[in-house]
Image 1 (tube, rainbow, N blue to C red):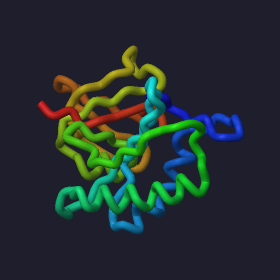
Image 2: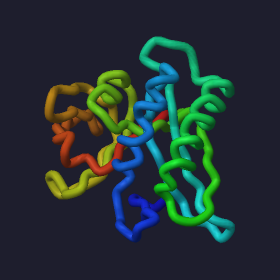
Image 3: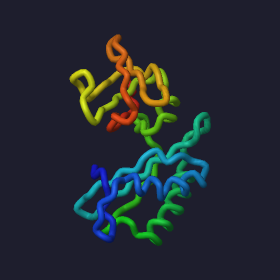
Length: 163
């Protein structure tokens, strides 16, 4: 996966630019934009957009994905932010969904997760365990009986880790 996008004017922007561009479109469909991934391939790139329902609602449907795909396609066509040919895929985040925001962590308290830090904490960057605590600035994850407090700003990536 490429963590950034090369825009048509040659500038390199992190995927956050597309998140900000597409988030209002997804929210207008009463869904949440969970994440965006871009992968290069020999036939062109693949832009993957992961959407989810709001807390407590039913699962994402094929119709939901189709609506988001249509809305996103129109904006991407008009703004043309990604250089070259690519395929757009819209889907649910899956059983090993990414955890990106504090609200995501709060939603999955008590669940098993894997979190990787940008910089080591106590000599390690990767933590696999049960999410115990979420506060304004950190999460607490129980790894084999020891709770580690991981600052949210130091988390590079985190996912659910079903057993």
